[in-house]
Amino acid sequence: MKILFVCTGNSCRSVMAQYLLNKMAADRSLSDWEALSSGIAAERYFGVPAEALKALGERGVQDVQHTPRLVTRELMRWADVVLGMAAVHIDVLHDQFSEHIPKTHLFLDYAGLGERDVDDPIGQSEKVYLRARDLIEAGLEGIVKRGAHAKP
Image (cartoon, rainbow, N blue to C red):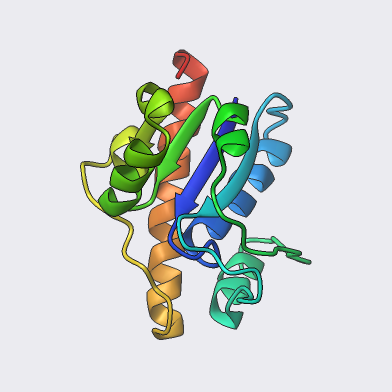
């Protein structure tokens, strides 16, 4: 399953989801699972915050090499499932890529954790990043479980 995670700047939430899912897939021998990420307002010059890197590092994700990128039609086509981290992301994706509406979902809702956003931790304390990471991990567990039983 190819999953595209989308947030605003593609430096925090979607990056954590991408790297955590790819690690989960490797650890669990889910060889047909792959994750990428992008943002609706990504700027290449904006790096991944140290707090996000630390949150990933605590889960064994090291050497994160990531440059933020805008979501594109090519990325949308690549994905089996597109997961926006907040409702605003879904709105933008539906407006810009209406042909992909059937495979575009709100991350936590798709994961079975309710129709709510993963709040943006940018500029906040390390504690906020850790809470976001933990919520993303819970969502990823739900997605992996769902993927084991059904197609997108």
